[in-house]
Image (cartoon, rainbow, N blue to C red; front, side, top):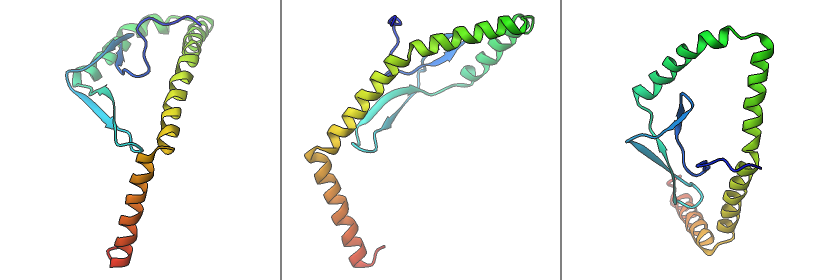
Length: 129
C-alpha cells in the first residue's frame, strides 16, 4: 500500500476544493469511556461553507460536459483512492479499539464503574431516583 503523505486519522481537517483546511476555532471532544480529551476538529466558518459551493460551481461546467463513461471512470478513480486508505483506517480503528479494551481491563475503569454503581444505589435507596 502506498503511504499517503501527510495523512493522519488522528488529525482532522475540512476538505475544501480538494485541499485540507483547518480553522482558528477548534472543538475537542471527550472520550466517554475514559473522560480523556480526543483530537481537535475544526469548527467551520461561513467561508468554509461558501467556498465549496463556489468550487462546485466552477467545476460543474466541466463535469456536466463529460459523458457517462468518463464520469464512471472518475468515480472509479475516487473509489480506488478511498480503498487505498482502508488499511490505514483499519489500523487506526484497531488501535482505538485496543485502547478501549485496555481501559475496560484497567483498575481505573473498575474503580470509576464501582463509584458510579454505588452512587446509583445510594440515589435509589434515598429515593432520589
